[in-house]
Image 1 (cartoon, rainbow over the protein chains, first blue to last red):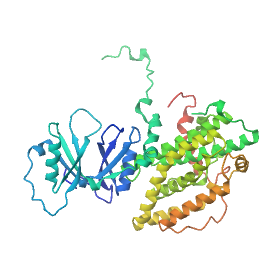
Image 2: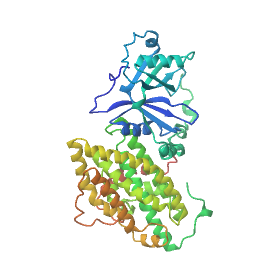
Image 3: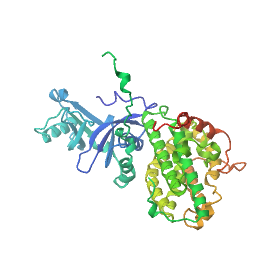
Image 4: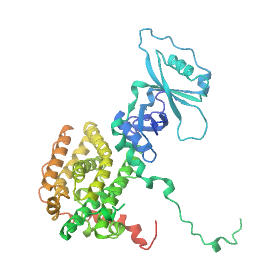
Length: 189
Length: 263
């Protein structure tokens, strides 16, 4: 996924933003999907709308896809040589999001920590080192200063109401099976 | 849904009748606005906004269910009968919510005006002497914070967007602004409710709402249109047949099979 190749034109759907959602205080932020939006505040509102209407959430972050550096397992095994770092450049902070399992899941990856690097490659090396021994199927480096976070003070109005809305659960809508027995008899299978 | 009967204060017949009228107006506005917003489902300008407007619609209809629930506790009227089998003449809606959905600017500006009205009304209702009303108001208020954030976001972006978005917003304001006084006009029984501490003073509420929306609209550089040339009919009468058209569609499924157990 290169930086801008999947961004739709700005005049129609807006840029693409990846959404990281934290379900409970004990869980990490997890990559749950993307939204299109015009700007950071709009992206956060759309993320809440799309990803927090049914399930529980305590926090939500968005980051523009163009500020996320992504690596598949294959790319990690065959990395090109690093570009020389500008020694005067300040190290940049990145959030490390990792997909560790192919188990069926509603999420793509978990937030595993934070690293710094003068180049993306330096940050990647630091991330891989910190993950020593853990399976890495895909890895994101999210430029930390691009992340927009939900306001902890507003967690209740943002995420609270969804908990009461049992009518939004699929399981509420059971169908009534009233087919008559004799209607199915004698039907060849 | 309905408050425990044991906790419900006993009201004098006159007060109870006035409260029933006010609850009907509260519920009807939410139901009809919810339905108008639901007309966007599948047609909103962005996929994410399609989900967002459907969410807002569902929330408003959910609030209507809460107000109808209080009404049912008071009068025994069945919310489903009120929503799906009542004639337009029996509704107590404001003209603001009856208007067709228009374009996105119209829908978002109307939502902003209604959200602003509720942002002033709910904190006042939370102090109501009638406990069931204050409890429901607290629940509604929590969701309205997000609605207002969403509609205010669009107001700002449409105002500062393109020439076209600004023109559409101004066109919407020219239609909606003259409808505000009718939204805020008290029902005949409201004064009694206010004396009982059940419902806020209509004049004070209207001033607070108008001050809030005027400030916000002027902050995004919109000029406030002139007031309505003529006074609109009260909520007990219909200005035109827009609500009747809406009900013809909204009630068609229920009316097609009134005996159905579920649909």
